[in-house]
Amino acid sequence: MKQSFRSIIFATLFLSAISALSHAGTLPVPFFPGEKLAFRVKWSFIPAGEVLLEILPMETLNGIESYHFTMTARTYAYIDPFYMVRDRIDAYTDAALTHTILYVKEQYGKSKRKVTVQFDWEKNEAQYAEIEEKREPLHVPPGSFDPLSIFYFFRLFDLEKSREIEVSVTDGKRWALGKATVLKKEKIEVASGLYDTYLVEPDLKQIGGVFKKKRDAKLQIWVSADRWRIPVRIRSQVAVGSFVAELVSFERGEAINKD
Image (tube, rainbow, N blue to C red; front, side):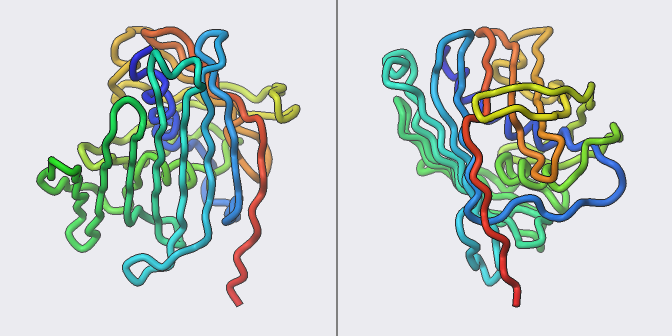
């Protein structure tokens, strides 16, 4: 199970973002500060942990009004002796959702580390740094997002028609473009309720880790077919077995008053 829980969560955010298949134009923003999405993650049939996605209050970062997205992930106590995960990611984008401003990832499980990625959009560069490592700036395409905030950019699009689009995603070490396909529309039931969804299958060619180790690796995401466009179920088939993450609760945020 080593690294698999963390890899699935990280890749889920990355791939759900690049799977944005849409008709022309974006829809009204379907999320606001105060939104919370809670998921339960199972490894095969064993409950392994939980993930919480939140939108915190708007902030001003480098003089720019910004969204503040967070993700926290943790394994359950009986899983911790095998592989403890206590992760937090903070991502900041401009209010127009056109690019990432700052990305911070912290791990407090069996391994402890803090990663910071600063973006310089005058130079189109991402600067990756850890306590003991600072890499050369990575050139990234204009309008690139980090693996967390790209998930929210993805939600701006409708999945009714299966037209492919490309999105640039970077973690500061590398960047990639990805594609995916909407397979069908179907009704599914999870702990939080009954949903009409679109089943989306991303392309895994550019993703490594546990996905790279299995020739027929697959990731499937069921996205709600409503104005909120949230992932309801995420299922993977990888070298270490199968993972399923399901939505257990959803709290809507409050619209931003721009008056």
